[in-house]
Image (tube, rainbow, N blue to C red; front, top):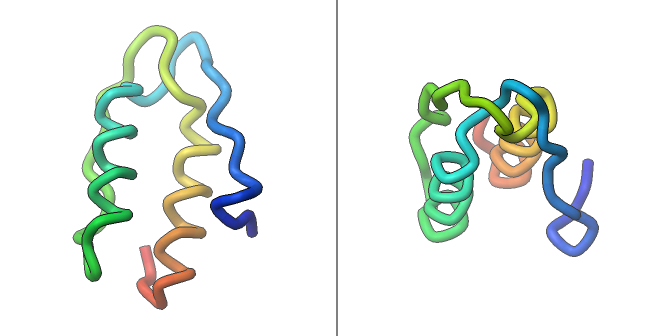
Length: 68
């Protein structure tokens, strides 16, 4: 599990999660105490790697004691 200081961003893939949606969700996640599960991100060309995003969200929620 990586901490915030170790996190370096997501790889871009041919078809991945919409970067703006993911960035907005992660920003909101850092500002809210008990967020709802991640939204169904749109799949777009040149998006963030889906597995990396899913793993990062899972780690962040686990750090807060929330199963996601």
